[in-house]
Image 1 (tube, rainbow, N blue to C red):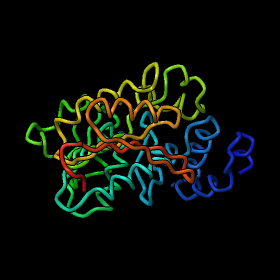
Image 2 (image 1 turned 60 degrees about the vertical axis):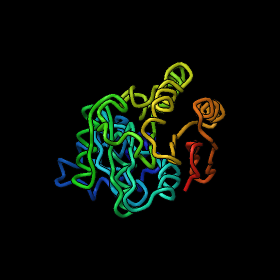
Image 3 (image 1 turned 30 degrees about the vertical axis):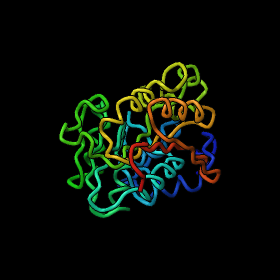
Image 4 (image 1 turned 45 degrees about the vertical axis):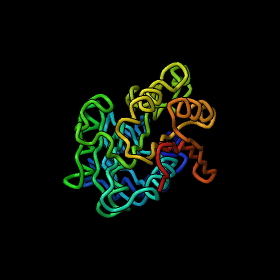
Length: 253
C-alpha cells in the first residue's frame, strides 16, 4: 500500500486489496504492482472494470468504461422492451451492450467497433447473447435491420483533439487515441452517427449519444438539423451528459 501511495494512487488502500485478491502468486502480485506504479490503469492491471454492477473484461489498449456512462445505459434501458433491436455503436469492450442485455430481457443486440482489440473484448463480454461486428460505424450492420432498430446507443469519442494532451496519463498514455479523439471540436464521430442513424431507426426510434457538457448544445443542434427531436439529460452525481434524440415521424415510446 505504501508503494501505491508513493506512486500517487488516490485509492491506494482499496487498490492494494484488489491487487492482493487478483494475484495468483507472489511473483504475479509484484508484477501487477510494478505495472500500477508505472501508471497503468488499475482496471487493466486487474483485467476487469466494474461497470453498472457488472465485471467487464478489459486489457491493454482497450477503452476502460467510465462510471458516467451509466447514464447512457439508464436512458437506453428505459426505452427498450422485449424483442427490440438495439445497436451499441463504438462499443469498445462491449460494456454498454452487456449491461443492457442484463437489464432488459429479450432484446436483440448488435455491438459494433472498428478496433480489433475492442472487438475481441466485446465478444468475450457479450458472448452468445448478442452479435459483435467489426467495421466502420454502420457498415457491418446487416441491411435487414434498416428501419427496424429501436435504440442506437453510442459512446463515440468526443474529446477535442487539442484536449487529449490535458487528459490524465492513465487515459492519454494507456488507452487508444482513436477511442478518445473526436476531432477538432469533438463532434466528428457524432456527426457521422447522427447523419446515418435515421435510415436504421424504426419509426419513433431513439438515438442516444454520450457527450460533453460543453458540447451538448452543438450535439443537439446537429441532431435537430437531421430531423430529430432532441434533448439533453444530465446527472451531476456521476458527471454524465447524454443526448436523447427521437425520430419525429411517429410518437415515441
